[in-house]
Image (cartoon, rainbow, N blue to C red; front, top):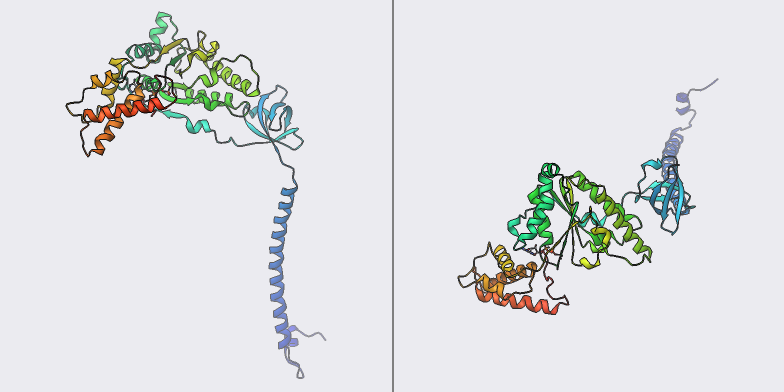
Amino acid sequence: MSLSSNSRSKPQGGYDAAPLEEEIQYLRRRVQELMKEKIALQRDLEHYKSEVTRLLSPPLIEAVVLEVLDDGRVIVKSSTGPNLIVNTVAGIDPQSLRPGMMVALNNRASTIVSVLPNRFDPIVKSMEVVEKPNVTFNDIGGLKEQIREVYEAVVLPLKRPDLFRELGIEPPRGVLLYGPPGTGKTLLAKAVARESGATFIRVVASEFVNKFIGEGARLVREVFRLARRKAPSIVFIDEIDAIGARRLELGTSGDREVQRTLVQLLAEMDGFDPLGNVKVIAATNRLDLLDPALLRPGRFDRIIEIPLPDKQGRVEILRIHTRRMKLDRDVDLEMIAEITEGFSGADLKAVVVEAGYNALRRNSKVVNLTDFLRAVEKVRRRLKNSSRVEGSSLLHT
Ligand code: ATP
C-alpha cells in the first residue's frame, strides 16, 4: 500500500515529521543560495576568461593608408617602419579607405583588421573659421594701394565673375602677402572675406608639418574640402614658408613629408576654377625662402608687399585704435606717428593699449599725451630688448 505525502507527514505511532520538513526547507534554501553563487561564479569566470584572452592577444599595429590599388590591395605606412602592401578583412571594403586614414593591422602586419577613429586633429582646433568676420577695410590703416590690389584680385572676381568672363581675363587663384610681422596681413585677409561675403578660414601652415606620413597632405585636403563646403570662402594660409620653403635636397623623410604637403596644396590650387568661389590668400615674412613652384602663374601669381606703415599709415592706424578712447586735447596723433618710425601696426596698437593702462593707473578716464609718450618708450624698450630684426612686430592679437 502506498502512502500519500500527506499521510506521510502526519505523526504516526509517535513519529514526528516536523524536523524532516525543516530539514527540507533548509536544503531548499541552500539549493537556491548555491544556484545564485553558481551564477555569480559563472559571471566571474566569463570575465576572467575574456581578460585572459585580452592579455594573451598580440597587439595590433597602427598604420596610415597611403594608396588603394585597383586590385583592392592597400599600401600602408606601418608605424613599425616600412611601407606594406596588405589586404583587408572581409568586413572592410578597400574602396572605402582613403589615403591618410588610420588603420590597425593584425600582428603579422598582413591584413587591415579595423579602421581607427580619426584622431583629434590639432589643426582643426587651431583652425579659425569665421562666417562673417567683423573687420572691414575701414579698420585697416594705410595700405590703400594694397587694399585696391587685393580688391581687384579677390573681392571683385568673387562678387562679379561675369565681368571677368566678359572681358576674358583670368583672376589669380591665389594672392601672396609678404612683409614684416604685425603689419596687418591677417587683418587684410579678414576684411577681404567680409567685403566679399565669404567665409574666412585661417590655418597656420606650420601645423601641417610634424605629422605622421601622409597626414599633412590629408589635412590640406580636409581644409579645402571644408572651404568648398563653406563657399564662397577665403582660405588664409599663414606662415606659408613652413611648407613652401625652397629645398635644396630632400634629405630626411621629414623634408619629403613637407614636400608632399606642398604638392598637395599646389594640386588643390591647380584644381580650382579661377572664377570659382574659393580663393587662397597666403602670408609670409620671408618671401626669399619660398619655392618658385608656389609663385608660378596660376598659383600665387599676385604677390603683394605689406610693408611697415609710413607716417601717414601710422597716423591712420593710431586713429583706428583710439576710436573708442577719450583723448585729452593735448594728444597729437601726428606727433606720435612722427616718433614711432619703424613701428608696425601691431606695435602701434600696443602703444594705444599701454597708454590706456597708464591713464587707468592715474585713475583717469581720459588718456593724455604723457600716457602716450610713456607708452611709446615702453614699447620701444621692448622692441630693443627683443631679438627681433629692426621693424618687425612685437605684439600680436
Ligand atoms: P603675422 O605676420 O605675424 O601673422 P600680420 O601681418 O598678419 O602678422 P595682423 O595679425 O594682421 O598682422 O596684425 C596684428 C594686429 O595689429 C591686428 O589685429 C591689428 O590690431 C593691428 N594692426 C596691424 N596692422 C594694422 C593696420 N594696418 N591697421 C590697423 N591695425 C593694424
